[in-house]
Image 1 (cartoon, rainbow, N blue to C red):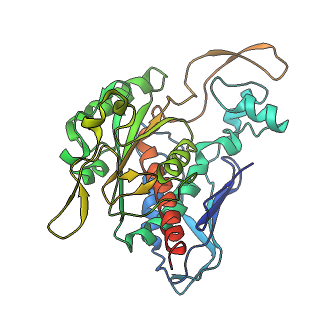
Image 2 (image 1 turned 90 degrees about the horizontal axis):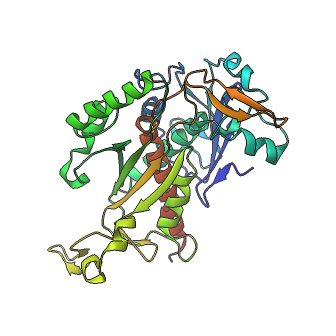
Amino acid sequence: MSSTYGSLFRISTFGESHGPGIGVVIDGCPAGLPFDTEFIQHELDRRKPGQSRITTQRREADEFEVLSGVFEGKTQGTPLALLIRNTDQRSKDYGHIAEQFRPSHADYTYQTKYGSRDYRGGGRSSARETAARVAAGAVAKLLLAQQGVQIKAYVSQVGKLKLQKSYQELDLDLAEDNAVRCPDPETAEQMFQYIDETRKRGDSIGGIVDCVVMGVPAGWGEPVFDKLHAELGKAMLSINAVKGFEYGSGFAGAERYGSEHNDEFYMDANGNVRTRTNHSGGIQGGISNGEDIYFRTAFKPVATIMQDQDSVDVHGQPVTVSGKGRHDPCVVPRAVPIVEAMAALVLVDMFLRNKASQV
């Protein structure tokens, strides 16, 4: 099982949804980084369950403990280990599916690959694992902030309800002012009601998270196989429930002529090379060009729904799977900090690799 990500800034996550806890070991974090515990906890609080009635009602404080790698408030350059204890497991909620394969879950594939599985909340396949990623991503954000890099994600779509404004037209800071994490208050309220109505029907709905990265200088990225957009794509597609990724003009770019799509260069008043448009999404040839990096990540509807569904059990016999437990009717509001965290992990690794590639 691959539980490690990164080249120079490497993370390894561990733990299961209903085990004693989850956590992450970060190897390659430079020494001397001020370790801002309040910021890291704030990032975890953005992802934690129980935030509103449109999220799972599992109650986890998600308070982290530092096991190693920090002394007198600064990183030491040694492995940094963070632990988050599970405190609100209800494993009995999953006893009925011990031998059943839930539709669109990882039950069947894990059972087939490993010969057994932890059926309590999905075990290792649970989105609970992403809390460890957010903790690691927060450390990466601290390092990136020293380079003037900002990462801001927000919900742009829930089901067929779409935000009709581009990120340049929005105050992205407003995304944190509502439960949906959409920076347009009117659209956010419509999305909230849409998700809540879906929850009351015992169903779930998907959505899209947009992300903008500002302040990345030209030159980050490692062609040919570790292109910046390729690594971002891999990172986003590794998140639970993600079904699609596009950057820049994305699939819509396939409909344009080259004369419409090309980003022309010019020299600005400060002597910097810039582009007049940004259909490239801040990345050309797999390397950042100094413009904003922007991409979109699509999430499927949460697989667990409070409705009966047909399936089979481990013996191949037909069964009816009944939805129980505590689950998000729509994952995208809580996915926003996860998307940011994975983007930060990609970018901090590219930053360090870029430094290592120059004399």
